[in-house]
Every structure is written in structure tokens, then in C-alpha cells.
Image (cartoon, rainbow, N blue to C red; front, side, top):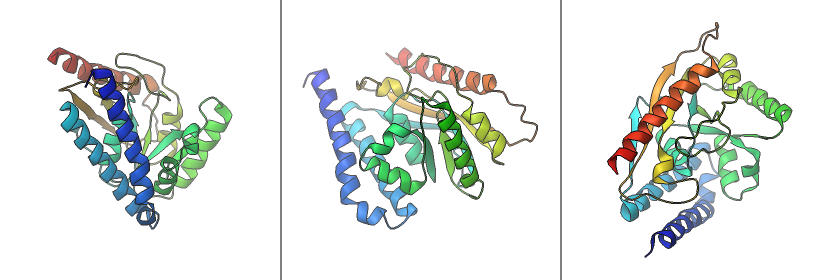
Length: 241
């Protein structure tokens, strides 16, 4: 099977499985957040198995993964694959996600069940209002990892964009640690839907920043740590050939 057709077929299978498994297991998932997470993690593992069998893609998780105490995870975003890795490895993940996804059948149902928060990317006032609502809700929680993508969208490996200030709002408002996460997942599964044979899709929990009332961690620091380590992961993968 030629590469382009193989990539299209694999992507179609993965996204079809999302709908089929999501609908078939919805009666079980709808009974509790815990059961919804079990279904989500099962789907992630099935996708990883497909990628391993078809492309020999390995999933690697580096650094210290957060436990289930309440925390914020600030991650680089290059691919649907890095979302799946975080969904699988974090004990109780929930995402700050773009509002357009709230209209996607099945996906939106599970997102609501696990506590994801919708923000409208192109409407700053509504985005801040949604974040403040999330803060009010999250302040009552003693568990779970709130994942935010500071770029606001997927980027291609090597691409650098400005980070949005939402992560600082969350960190300054919630008394919980912030984990910085890098990735090179966009090499193994690109934004355009291409897969790379014999590659490693890595995420790295670079650093844990403990909450401080001083709020002395700046956005530039967060950006530099994530971008530098993401570039390092990408360079290591490219060097393999």
C-alpha cells in the first residue's frame, strides 16, 4: 500500500474507532466520570497498538508524571497523538479545549463527562470568562489534572508562536502545581495526517513549578522551557533518520 493511501486509511480507522467505541461503550461510560475515563484510556491504547503494528511507532513518556492531586499541565501541542498520550498517562485529565469541538458528536459527550472546559479562541472576552468559570469550578476540586495548550492550537515541529496568558491566570488563581510538558509527537503523526515509520512519539514532563503567591514565574520562562525541550526531542528524532 502506498504511503499516502496507507496514511489516509490508518487515519480513517482511528477516527472511525473513536465513533464506534464511543457510541458502543457510552452506556457504560455515562454512569460515571471514572468509567468514561476507562473508555477513553482504552481507546488510546487501541490507537497506540495500531500505530505500533502499522508504523512501528513507539510511545515514550519521560519525566515524573503527576499523581492524582489537583494540578495544572501546560503542554506543547503538535498532534492528536500528544492529546492521546496525555489522556492515557494522566490519572484524571481534563482539557481546556476550543469551543468548536463542543459540536463534535461523541467526542464532546466524553469531554463534558470528564470535565473539559470550552473556550472560544477568537473571542478574548468569552475565553477569559470561560477560564474564570473554570477557576471557580476547579477551586473546589482536590484531584485531577487540568491540561492547557498555551499556544491555543496545534503547531508543526519547529514552529514557534506566542503563548497566551491563560496559563498564568490559572496558575495565579489556583493553589496547585504547574507541570511543563514538551513533545515531538508531530513528527510521528503530523498535523497534515502523515505518519512516520519507526519513530518515537515522546512527551516529557520537564519541570514541576510549585504554586507561589508571589507569582514570579513569567510566561517567557514557561515558553522557553517548553520550546527548548520540544526542539531537543524533535532534533533527536530527526537525527535517527
